[in-house]
Structure formats: C-alpha cells, structure tokens
Length: 80
Image 1 (spheres, rainbow, N blue to C red):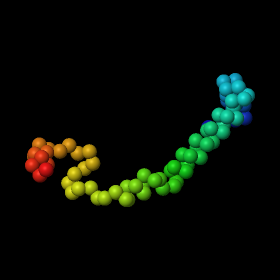
Image 2 (image 1 turned 30 degrees about the horizontal axis):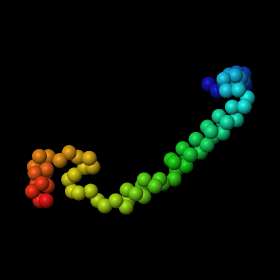
Image 3 (image 1 turned 90 degrees about the horizontal axis):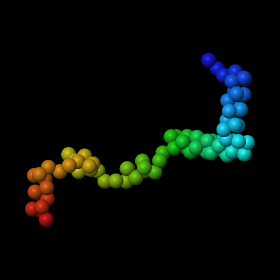
Image 4 (image 1 turned 90 degrees about the vertical axis):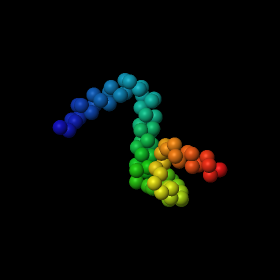
C-alpha cells in the first residue's frame, strides 16, 4: 500500500514541526551521510579483512579465547 500525496504532506509537516525549519536540512544531510557510509562499509572490503589475512594461522586445536585445561597450564609452567 503506497503512500499518497496527502500522507507524505502530513509526514513532512510533522517532521517540520518536530525539528524546525533550520534543523530539517541538517537532519537530512546527516541521514544521507550515514546511509552513504553504511553502503560503502557493506560493499567495499574492510581493513579488518586485510588484517585477518596477515595474521599467522592459529595453533592447531585451539580456538581464539579458549580456556586452557589444567594439564595445559601445568605443561606451560614446567616448560618455562
């Protein structure tokens, strides 16, 4: 169900009353900038992806943030 011209006019009037005539362009500008940044973030490869490729492979059998077992902790202490 698309919005008709009267519904759009009422929405525009409510926005104008809430933000005022001076703030409406600022709000539109910041909304456009946010949408542009979001679109760029979704479509372009991020620097995080590049950092992941540069990292060495994880130790075999250990997930990041995994909790060491008591035997592993003991083995580490004795190897030092």
